[in-house]
Amino acid sequence: LGDLMDRGPDQAGCVRRARELNIECVKGNHEDKHIRWFKHEQKNKNDKRKNPMKPLAERDFLAHQQLSESDLEWMANLPLSLDLGNKWWAVHAGCEPRFTLANQSERQIIRVRYVDSDGVAKSLGPNFSQPANTKYWTEMWKGPESIVYGHCVHSESEPRIDKISDTVTCIGLDTGCVFGGMLTAMLFDPFTPEERMFVQVKAKKIYYPRYGVTDE
Image (tube, rainbow, N blue to C red; front, top):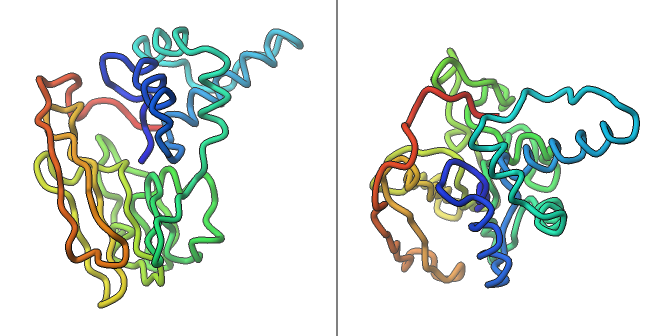
């Protein structure tokens, strides 16, 4: 569900392991950050432009240096969504309720969290706080697709499940492994989703503090 590149102890190794196993992945906002950084740096070599992006944090800069151009190309070609069958889809962050799944912007399908009453995505407040007068995107999503997503840690032990209607459900699987929580997978058949099963592995330690860094 994205963010193979994030705050873990071996970001580039995580990407390479996914490639070795030929795992289907969606693009996350952290993969996107490294792709954009690489493209700007390539431009710098040719025309001496300053990279317009915010400098990478030390951990990200060191991880970026370990990526090959082949790794970056693989990340750049990741899809924004995966069709799981029977109107179940996997994305990284979620959907702006004002648009259908087919019309989501790349920026928001890998970043959205909170939306206003019109279903428009709004930027986070300090320390990932919820902006005033907003709702989490799943509270306004009407489908017809059911969505499985990552990106946002609602709990470090339990996935978030929002049953929108008899035919539409949204499931957030990020349970904060990097923060010392759980690494969570969901096993299910989209034609019998009520029989889903969650499989979890407890993090060996806290790899990164929960707050204090602004996401991009």
